[in-house]
Image (cartoon, rainbow, N blue to C red; front, side):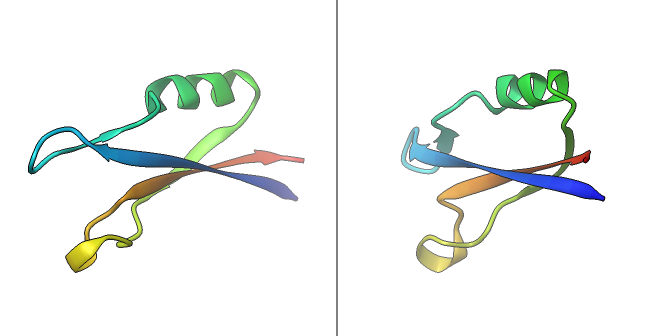
Length: 64
């Protein structure tokens, strides 16, 4: 059986055309890996204007 964990990372406007994560997702992935979690997917749902992303989710799993 596997456990799953979902971490939402919000995006903020960096410039007129570019978005920047509010958290350092590299550190989030490394921290969770040390705790035994494996990154499965990074999901970017189209939640903004004209289908743009305003956030992404890191999806982790580990055997329970």
